[in-house]
Length: 589
Image (cartoon, rainbow, N blue to C red; front, side, top):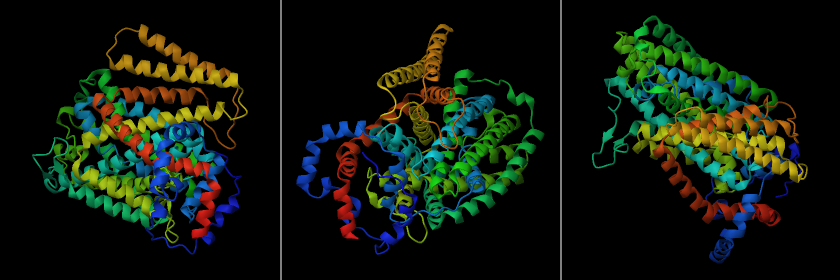
């Protein structure tokens, strides 16, 4: 697909170009404007050409210029550049802190890793920082709302980007639903010390889906409604409440260590090293949220400065905070006595500080509320960019002229996440969410290596073959290490061999010439850090267990069915008939 040359001034004219259009419209042409869906016969013809079209989409790649300019025209109105690095830092803090440490820590300390959950947080923190570095480089180079979706579309192609897009939407919906359920648990623990107090039990439903949660639905609707009203307004609200969170977190850590007992840390590894790694894969949920902030690049004043400072600075602070909070919890209460649903508030009640229980519960509610707000901003922008590509109807890409926010995209995620949160328990949600997140982060690290080492019409054929060979060794050896570990393989030979293969593959990449250098800011120590990120993400994915894999495969199969019948033909039309579509688009306005 040949992208038009990028002219920053062209997007500034979008508001004038579409000022006669009403935002609130519901025509078929707004949902399916592509030629394949104009009539039943055209759709039959499109289905008959599925195989060649699929081959075309698998090999197709977007470009920086197309994502930055032409693709954004689908929104008709521009998002407002109103965020600085200070906003991004606190958006990242507000979006991440509260989404996991108040949700998953108790669960994993109780049944996953015991006191060693602090090591689980450290492992996940290192992996998250590697992903943050990759996201920061892409955010500087391609500052659009699509985040990882746009990065993958440019570097790994249209088809891989769709698989990622499906998982991005799954991550968005499941993440928001999980936060809604946790918000309900904490509120219930404050009211009656029963995390299921507000839920309605239906015994005839399957376990994990038998507790209906109307409170979770209500909080999702309120948080997303605020996010739709304006980006800067949400940022200011997040800043104020995040400062309150910092004060209370300091209180939790200080009081936790004050009332700590070293005996509570014995045994430190009650579930062994495998339990630590499995919990690391699950508590990765606690670090998610920064990728949503990366989606705010299109609304950032100076992406080259603001994105690296905001993302790297916030993640460094968050990793330290999480490890201290996890250690404080497990030293304050024996891991066997930790409440898996509302760990911190119940822990303070157990040491006799009932008033502190309410303070911590309110902080947890606040933290989860800001996570919902920031998540709503990022999820809607992911959805907007996916709709701009026509993988889902472009109607969802429309930006409201007054609020400067994608209201339709926000509503889509809100409604779906509310439905999921109403039926599905937290333990079911956490494994699905972690798998989707780790999978996307692995793909982004891979895309960064592709960006550095492969440039179309520049990288020679021999260089491309060597790059593919080295990348294959990195991925295959990473999968091998994860498989051996989770199969319980003893001895060092298997790990030494697969580790050596990973090292040789990465070393081979290090010896190859790079064909693209970041213009402003880039990940240091390439290819070592991105390669290590790939290995860690695949290792953590392998630790999630059989059920998580099964759920992931089922969800992916459903996504592929949608792609073969709808998304494939829409994106093919956009790529191969741009002039006809543009003429029709202009004529209707």
